[in-house]
Image (cartoon, rainbow, N blue to C red):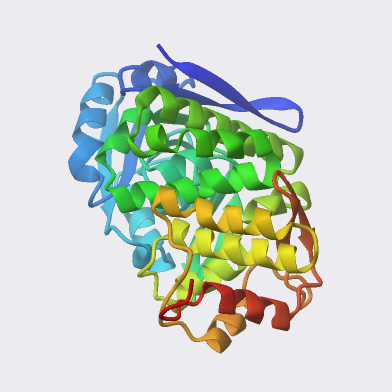
Length: 367
């Protein structure tokens, strides 16, 4: 039994998102796309390969001409053009052509890299997303953003390229450790903060079930989070307007992530960036003090940080200048008018960002 959601592009159905609890439907879903008899390359990483690649290979091998797996070394530091070139070579050696299929099996790094390969190999081949982390299921697998890091800047090289299918096996979340799971939750919380106050409240009301990975609650959470992103992406697939709202928490978050040499998880940095953005919103009189402190403190029960140690403010602020979201030297910053309603602003000053960083830098005995 599966739930299904369709993402539309240019007012036409583009791809389905399938929500289920195992991989039993995957073969039929891919066959329905017209790839029967074609070659399939499963692109994964060295961690996920050990968990799921053989199961998926076995489920597909009887139906398809060739099913092979390529494992990228796990970790954000391998999200670069050198690793992309190795994937190209793997596909070339096995004579993959435009009619064959790539499968991204893993988290956001694998999804972004596989999507970028699909967009550029032979000027475009089809790919399917099988996200296995909470972050990739609720955020990065949806919307067709692909890319790799360059010069230490996240996703500086990439393309908008839509998958043919997103297949979400919710049970894969059980393999995540608590820190990985919490990192993904930051993107879920972000969706509520920018678009749906009722969902934000629901998350707080269900925090114990979410932390315990109650399957029914997690399924509802993932589906609702995906639906928020679906609506945003359908309105603005190439990030000209509304889709920029999804960058809430990312301007300073990405800068912190880079400054910490990716030792902190992406979602942890997004949580810190979201708190900083909420702080600026409060200081501009958009949020009340009570709303700001609630937003800040609500990251705590979901095991996300609200402060960070050992960062150089000047270095972090300088890193925001190289963010790919900047426009003519103006940094596009997402702020909150209220919980559930965000907007893009290009007037946030360096002084405002500095004060926001002061708010999240840990100082001993600071409350």
